[in-house]
Structures are given as C-alpha cells and as structure tokens.
Image (cartoon, rainbow, N blue to C red; front, side, top):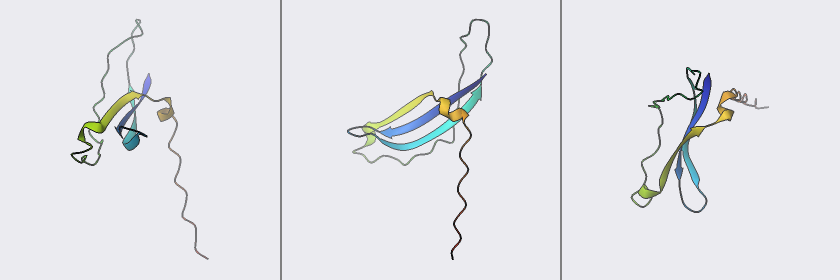
Length: 82
C-alpha cells in the first residue's frame, strides 16, 4: 500500500513557525497481521542552521499525512505584461 508521510522542521515556542516541510509517499508490503515495520530515509530535507538562541527550539515532526497523496497543484503561469 502507499503510505503518505510528512517530515517537518518547526521553530517551537509561542506561535510555532514552519522552517521546512516535505511530503513523501513510500510503499509498504502488508501481511495478514495488518501491522509491519517500515522505514523512510529522507536525505533531501534541507533547512537553515539555527542560531545558538534557537538551537534547542527546533522540533522535528514525522507523521502520516493523507494530504500527501493528492497531486501537487500546478504553478500558475506568469501573467503577460500589457
């Protein structure tokens, strides 16, 4: 089955701020038990190094994201100048 996942890096605190986020889809082979271990290695998650003051406030979230199964919206074509 296709498993939609999201990796997010957030600056925690009052009013969390998203630093980076990326959706992934991985294929998992299920067995009759309905529960199998799987892993995802995301080597392309890039984010700026935190300042020393923010170093302990970076939070990494990894979880299921059903929205990741939807195709990415196509970017709008640039408007022509008149």
